[in-house]
Image (cartoon, rainbow, N blue to C red; front, top):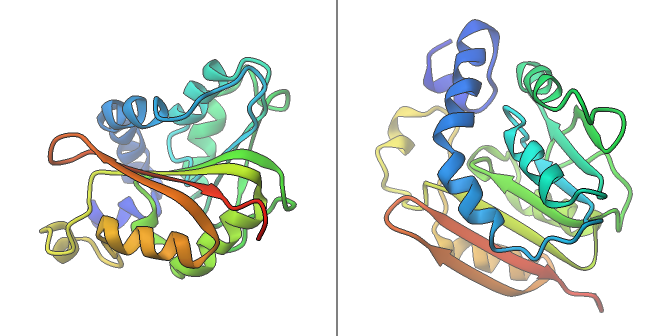
Length: 202
């Protein structure tokens, strides 16, 4: 398996190295994106594609009495996320196997669902957005953050199975799956944050 193949599902030694690199390299994007949400002391959050687990750790700090959950399809990612969050694991933090199109939680479970650098790899993005809507509480927030939003990017040619969406395409999909108050923010060429509210009356 090549270096870029591990972007979707980190495996083995190369996957472990990728996760370390992601935790470091995605930090500026992560901190900036998380600042778009009004965190409360008891916010309950889900991170889809929790990867190296550093975003879970940040959210545990932002919500000191909340419950923070993470799901991923990669065993290496699950192992790393659990290791990074050992102190809160089984207390305020849960990390388990799960995919975006079949989220293993009940409806109306979370105040916020996050997705960092991961929607490019979701097999059925519209079905996944419906799943996010399902597990969010009424008026809950879906926050998407990434560095790729140009379909003509070189990454679309060198990373197998990647689908890069424009901000307009993501906004349209969000509205079609029941979200409203969709907002798009960018910083420089490589930071994009899209966040939307679950329409309570749907």
